[in-house]
Image (cartoon, rainbow, N blue to C red; front, top):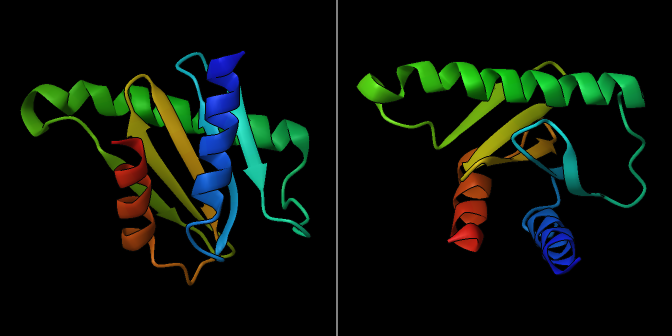
Length: 119
């Protein structure tokens, strides 16, 4: 239980980094959402099944990236910019920290702050 409480606290801390962050979740290596927090007053853009699919997509991309670790080095983070949202994925051990932000967010600063919290 203490690990889960720590992960919940981390999600809240990540969410407070920047007002442009809409959602933060910690995804385990099996694709299960271990903890999450959402900006107050935000209506999710995706349904629950769609959200689970996005999480699986992030996990699949992370696994595919491992194919190139030997030659290119491990992936530290990635960002995907879509028409309505940015998805930021920060790799942390076997877990992934997923952040959904407004399209105008400063993802470099957000990633840097997330990494400093994780270190």
